[in-house]
Length: 85
Image (cartoon, rainbow, N blue to C red):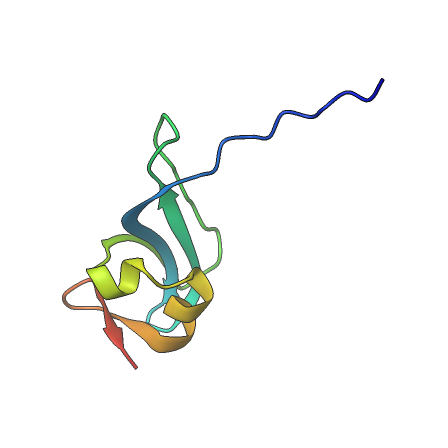
């Protein structure tokens, strides 16, 4: 008799993202913050000249995939927000 595998619950994402960027605002990596996972996500980078930023996404950005956010946005250093390229 075959054993049916139990599927893991689908991860739901909050309207927040963790972005790794360089000093000019160029995005190097984007990760979405899960909403239904307990605990806090901590991200550190040991790459020189790179920074980690947790940002609130607007409605349009929250509907985008991390790849689309990466390709269409950069970090505005002074305001610490995502802006379109």
